[in-house]
Image (tube, rainbow, N blue to C red; front, top):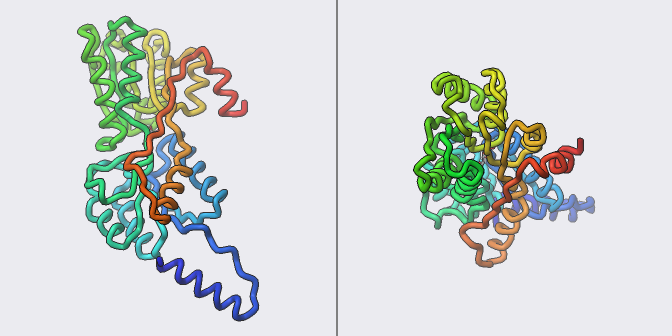
Length: 317
Ligand code: GZL
């Protein structure tokens, strides 16, 4: 039995002994090490997981790492010391997790990777609840190849350097467009999944590529960078969504508004509601049940034809 749980039981026993009313005991005590709040998708994912914990009566110990791996490692160690029942970890980058995952395993605390993956021995974590980023990149590439009949020179805004999302989305997109001799990636650079990063890097792409005249399309690893790039394209005197096609990933509300306004052309939805499958996996593990190593959460591709209605649904506006 975990440290925190022992304490709760002892406290409850004392309350009963003193005839005090018994505070409702949490269903589970879970530590959640979140990457940060770098994008609209990330903040909606955090809100969704907190809401799911609340709904289930789970005591969620939340830690925001401000994009720093060392803060995540510190948080996981603190959760282990508190003797939580399980840990959710959204790993900011793929590498550097073996030691702390081993410490959690040695403490008998299951770790669920949430949203992103790690380059570590799979026996060190219970499961990964995440979409297939390679598939997302491939879907973006397939849409662009179809849209342009395989004739398009692309610039790419990559996500956070070293993150599984950026590595795999780049791989998936590259795999598809390598089948088209008249498609190539002119420039590829990280905008770190942020709007400001997307705008800044897109400005440099436009300058380097004849004011944007050489660029047929932008592939952005997330919507926030795409929305930043829209600003840069407009400031360069070009029409985003027309002079330069734009495909991105996440499906945040603002991308539907941009598509409805004709400023971007396609977005692949990334499911932010990862709490339920993650909490179910920990419960299953506590009940001694088998849990698959990867619980996939892929989303569909959206286009401008349904964007206005999707925006209304998601934003309530
Ligand atoms: C991908 C996720 C990415 C989102 C970005 O699953 O890790 O991180 O696509 C977020 O919006 O910053």
